[in-house]
Image (cartoon, rainbow, N blue to C red):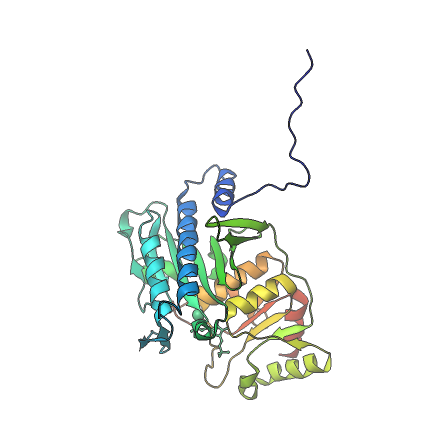
Length: 336
Ligand code: AHM
Ligand code: MG
């Protein structure tokens, strides 16, 4: 009797993997994993789909513009900031594994579950809609998130949250641009998914992303140049003398996504108005730093100061940011 040939996937057909399947595959490679983190990532994926649809319909539903209140940073909240925040609180709040949530839009951390009995629980920090002032002009905006293990011995929620970024278990962002992109790291490289709106699922489009080691491009708000510390001004002179391009959307997720894919350097230096920089350590700089480092780049707060090693003292604290291609970050640091 002749053996039945084993069917082989034709080489032209790559495996089709959704974010959900990818998370389960990764979980399976950690026998000690309980699935708690996977449930949290799935809540983030659902939030991203809901927020993406709200962003797409914002003009039609008349939810553009300011909400009329200021957040803890003293910044104008957009209506969609508030909506996106509620979506994330709602989806994460339903997940057993979430102990504490902290958001750019809430002054205090939100305790989701009685933390005293928490076994394997996590803290999730996020900026629900970063760059939201770009919404009125159809610009790219994003959600940024960071996941830390909840410290059961911590005396209060602040103490559990105040861990350096190097201890993040997972981090990522969602870019609501010409397509909706979900970029994720759980500490084993960076994977990228694109939302297929026709089936409502994020599909894997690239595994193990690497940021190019060099690219002659910088991304910074040059309107603030006169108040940058001198070293940054020296760097900009050098870059302009050496044929660098300037690219700045003013939405960190969009700017960092471009650098992740094409290379270059993103800067938010100290300024007169924001002497410690503008960007927030725990839910903007840390997750972006983890992604960029996992993709082979560098992320610093200053010379010799890795963002991921900064010990936070406040969940809303700010930090200067220099991140991107390894060689380009080195060029900046050489001038500081
Ligand atoms: P936000 O969290 O209030 O939206 O502010 C963060 C945004 C980043 O997305 C962006 O990189 C930066 O602010 C732009 O700031 P500036 O307008 O000062 O250049
Ligand atoms: Mg922000």
